[in-house]
Amino acid sequence: MPKPPRISNSRTLNETGVFHIEEIDLEFANGQQRTYQRVVGSEEGAVLVVPMLDAETLLLIREYAAGVNRYELAFPKGHIEPGEEPLTAGNRELQEETCYAAKRLELLNSVSVAPGYIYHTTHIVLARDLYPHPLPGDEPEPIEVIPWKLRDFDQLLAQADFTEARSQLALFLARERLRHR
Image 1 (cartoon, one colour):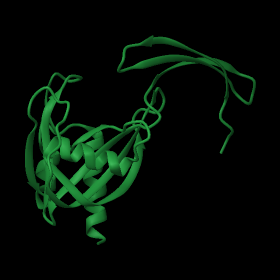
Image 2 (cartoon, one colour):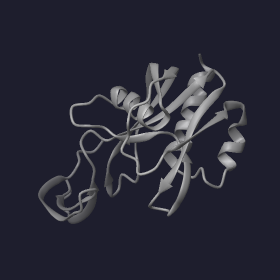
Image 3 (cartoon, helix red, strand yellow):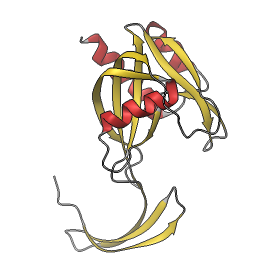
């Protein structure tokens, strides 16, 4: 694998509170120099949880997604607090968004989204052995929790409001993990 280019300089272009946009000056091993722009997330990243209510039933949430200006069906997700581990963050987000906690949490994978210009990692977690345990969240309105049978996998992928790539990937990863158990 080639050595990454050297960052000779970086500067903040904009800081919105949600987004940190920076410009970086790069020098490649062959001497070529370029300036790139990127959106920088937190070092901790985010977590996305695939909750299994039982061996056959997923829990999904429906909440407003500002980026597409509509309500989306997805898995619970949120940012990881500084110093918090992904599994701990996953259980916290699960409780805040579904009112369940999990006795068993397993990291399925850690993924990036558009790594050419976004520095952000999402840790995908499978949550099993759920029990009721609500925590107050920071959402502006109650989140709708929707049980979905895993056998109806294809129908979920066909849903017009189930478009988030991370949730779709998590669905595939969880199904494969559960098949091998």
